[in-house]
Image 1 (cartoon, rainbow, N blue to C red):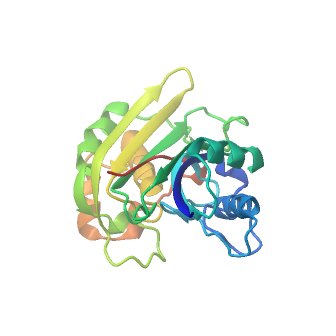
Image 2 (spheres, helix red, strand yellow):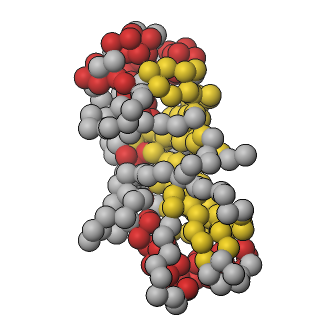
Length: 250
């Protein structure tokens, strides 16, 4: 009897060409589909459906996917079986059997992203794949003063990478925080919202860093919402510092 499995996965995005399957590329989706279909031993291909895409080099602590499996297997057995077949840069951290109307992408109510910024003067070779890098001193209080302008429902056209073909650039941000990790010499940003545009978090982080450095006024987000011009936001933080931390469902 076919059952629907919801799995939560963590992965190091360094050596993946993003989440979504692409011809002749190693992606998270293709690695998962290879494992699931090898376990199935059926001729009919079993597709994997993710909560959304992550780009090349972006990591995940709590990406969610679902698939329908044609054999009887407990959630715990599925978790162990998949982890025995997956490469070391991808692991299943949770598995559950869910109703047939659950969909990893279409039933989500929001996501939380984390972005890590290393503030060492030179690029740390042990962090280069897992943080962004910003060597300039920043005023954390200025960044904190700007964060309330991020929260709420806004038109984020200025914070969407060119080439995106979404119908609406309006998104709602529920939570936006920053803290300094003194031990690691890092800034840790977190954003939770109803959904995010292509590169939105990375562009927002780059803008906030410029505010902290004094290159923009504290409330420049309000102007950027009005001008709706990607060129006005300018910079995009590197993919290496971005983590999909959590996906929210009912």
